[in-house]
Image (tube, rainbow, N blue to C red):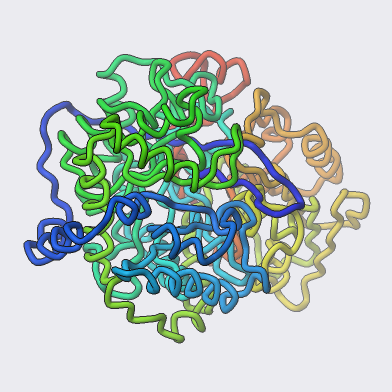
Length: 614
């Protein structure tokens, strides 16, 4: 999902993207969890559907950002089916797990005041851990998880995330992103597991199982997964956010459909529709792909949700957008503040109700959408309203959860160069100098989608360990560790560790046409090399960067991606407690010209699947 800050501090206008890879045409029999074919649940759905008015049905199809609600009581007034937190729509009384729990259960209480007491489902972007909440564990972004090639680890990561999400009273995560990102210039590259559709399919399905369990169920830690963003957003021309994927249908099916098939087979209960277009037509209004392919051909029984105000982009006429998106197969519409127009949830409800009364949206389409939403809510046991186990809330950020993230970090690191066996370093090294401000910056380590939409520098969250701290905790007490962010105070070290890379960013603002490592980072590495000590470079980035002289000036180089809060996993590899196993989930381009030419041209610096060990 795209995120817009809903506070008075800033308001952005933006949107989302994602994609997928390898699939052969043909009808697929859905292997969704048994609850999607459970006669008892189907009977409950039909009974409840028969009792609902049109207002109550349309309300279920509406998801409103918490900060966009005029009054919290509008959840009851308009029978809203869902609320979400996007951007900085944090609780008014702080960003603690307890504050989030209070806010989520507060909105739920209004839903339970309605005539039929249909429960609310709260949604949030938990894309690398429960990343909005202070103190939660932040895992490596998906590009790093792709380098692990470890579906069981991905499943464990999302199981931890699900438990932390559930501990705040939230039962819907807008994850996993199963984009097959084809162009590193795209600002969401790090949200993709990789460029290969088979890899993305395998890890995406594992993520779904981690969130939901073997099947979506009434288990209070079973969190609704949301595969996103259907379809082709990772293949837009020049990696443009909310852009246009230009290809024939065979290519679309081969490159971008397979992860959705795998997610459906894993039982995913919701799918988010992309902002992007296919050959000029916005996905939010593409009936062929949403209904004919996704629902009918692939047998998807869950529900579709739009991205952040995404239907607004279909045309200049909002009422037309409402009609086209719902008729195309959209089941739930995400509505924040009006971005391009003055529309909000009241306008959406009014327009859709009028369209139904005039026969422009058939009642059968409304019933299908609501049936799908209710089916998921019944399967999840939301009608039982069991409350939240305090133990789940207490476990947020626990040592056991951080241990899983530490494992994810060390498995995600890719060793690209190790001249004359520079690594591993000895824990008994006499003098070690660490340079680069990123070495002691948790925000840079975590990247975007961390507390704030775009992320931030500094100590953005509590409980994490920076790479510098991890190094100091690992070496011998007799080792002298000098930290010089700008490299001005090197001393006479036996080795130098340089931590460099990209500042935090997220979608849209992360788009780049030039992926060169910054001139200042290149100069820092060149400067410290002149000391004569071996230089170990750790690159923090959301995608491969063009390394130029930095590669030659480094004795060893590790692609650490965006490792998250557990910097100790980096130290595990640096000092030999874990031998590197990560393999590139993306081809590493050698030049910006190579990027512009596409994957079929130019010699890469490192091929897909490359990764050294000790």
